[in-house]
Length: 65
Image 1 (cartoon, rainbow, N blue to C red):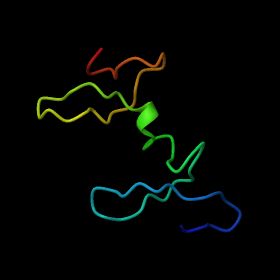
Image 2 (spheres, rainbow, N blue to C red):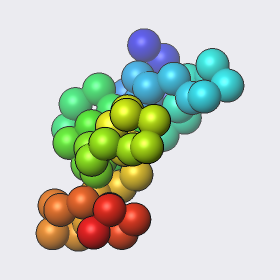
Image 3 (spheres, rainbow, N blue to C red):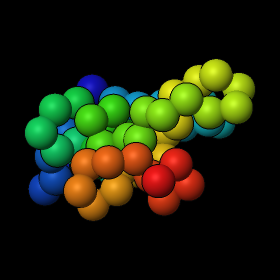
């Protein structure tokens, strides 16, 4: 786990190009953008869970609302 001087732990998520996320992890091993608790989760046309950010009220993203 990499550490940045003066910052917290880095997010443990790997980007689509295979690099590590550069954001600081908050409340667990992931940044707020990669945390599965903050993702929509509704099924997409491909059958995988949607990874867009959930709505402000915890509901689905704007595409699935």
